[in-house]
Length: 264
Image (cartoon, rainbow, N blue to C red):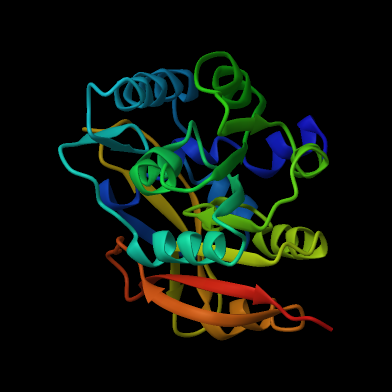
């Protein structure tokens, strides 16, 4: 996947993940294009600077935790995700190579850094939009945290054990295509977190942002859980499912999953 493709695939997705702080989700649209036409968009440069500023404060120890530009006075852990990472590292001699797709400037990495620092080796690789990658390389990258413009570029540099997709898939026009692409690379594990599911067919909504955070609205999927799991079932076995931190104003559940590759 080249730079243009990654930009098309995740159009400012890292700017759109302050899930628990949004006004809500509305509508049931027949297509992504229809929902997009009824969305207002957002000021991406303003939000980029906001995310960068918050991430800097956490990196430098000024603040404890940030998620999607919002500062918190305590860390909100996704303990199933953390447990999954430590389990995978334990099976690999306390070494961990992660591909965090759409991982912004390292929110999940810094969230779990205290525990990750106990491991012998960590390579946390983030695949993001070009402007995020550029900022990451210039201001955040170190011996453990790395930034890449594409999945293929990342895989040329590191033998990835686990791919993380946290609050990402619902913001992609074609989420199943991404799942198919990633599974084609055959990473041993997939961890999916903060993803919304409902009963019935997949549904396209519009997510409206609380203007106290920033002004904007954009399309967002809610997935049918059985269809979602089935899309991976030929290549991956479901190891664990768990409740995620978020919630919505429509009947749904935010969930996470840990999958392990099936050895065919």
